[in-house]
Image (cartoon, rainbow, N blue to C red; front, side, top):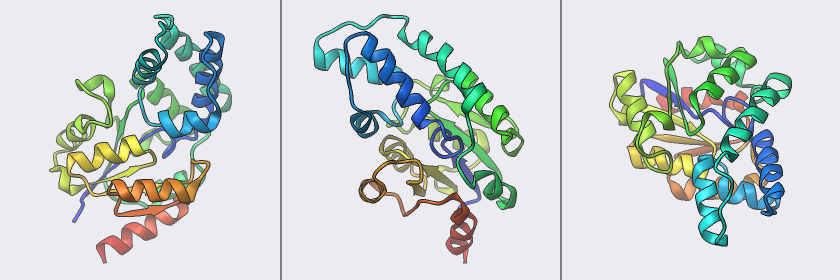
Length: 220
């Protein structure tokens, strides 16, 4: 029986995946690394920017500029202010879900805080935000979710996680949290749903409007 819900941020609460992927593609292309949108989604959604860069450098035998993440941050903050929207249906879902809520993300804290403010959903979490910066290892390791559960005051098994990426589901399952997979932010939903299920997501859904009903069914 869960008593607390931990939401991933990007792709679950905020509709940021396309913005992030587009920015990553442009920055990488300027440095000679051309990757399709499909490959970006398949390989790097849910991973930290540092993990992506390290993987590409090792794979291609190159060195990318050390300030690349700082450049991305400037671009992303501007795009967030001008373009960012909440995931469709998430405001309405959060309004009716009565469980206490927190966030566990592989994104940087300052960007997540801006995203919550811009999208008007910060009040649902009362500052309960754990990021990869708070732990030694980001997702797919379980550290983010273990710390988020500890900060909430519950065992991981009492915290239901809502995740959209294979990286995030792997982290949540490894932490011992019951996990739901969300596919609404992804290009190939049926394939992605299968991947999340195989990793241990107990149920997969693609519309945030469904979430309150799913929670009710889990506790019936």
